[in-house]
Length: 206
Image (tube, rainbow, N blue to C red; front, side, top):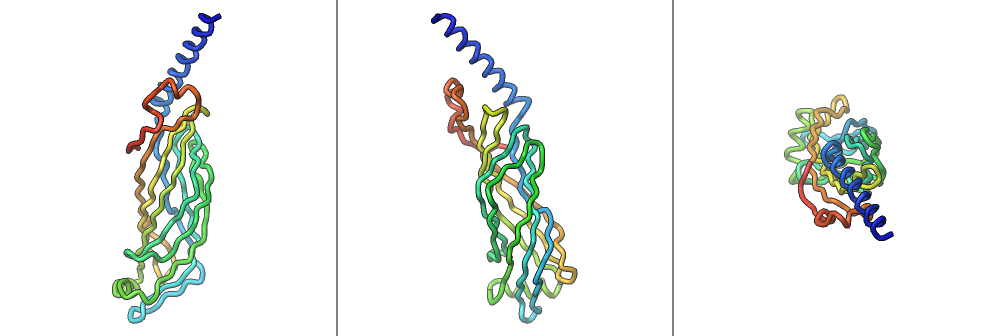
């Protein structure tokens, strides 16, 4: 009985090893991409070059692109919008799941406003004169990619987008986003105890 048990354990370990090798080579886990896709505006009010300010509501469409063969589950997060170094608005992203090999799209409303900020108003006056207000957005999504219900890898993606609001047409244009990542392995099944050194190992990856 003991020899049969040891044989079964060895067989299970071999199968597990093959699954792991397949997952790590053929199904390489990649960092999901988080970005602002587009936006429309409501209650759009801007000041003048001599009395610069803005106040508006932006209905932004976000996208989380997951090219992995497993789901990406992420936690609650916050997206912050900036004019220069001044924060002008923020919104909460609710935890959810981006399905395998797909892009999850969702909309969220945020109020953006800036007034009586002397440090920013000089540049804002120039921007209003040119008809283009430049903003940026930043966020971080912490989550996990799960493959074949046995392999789970932590993935965090940092969103850093720049964009322009055209005041005359109330349109958002020139959206440019960059993503960076951190990752780490997480124990998701008992067999991970056979692969010491991977659990809790954190580094930088794509």
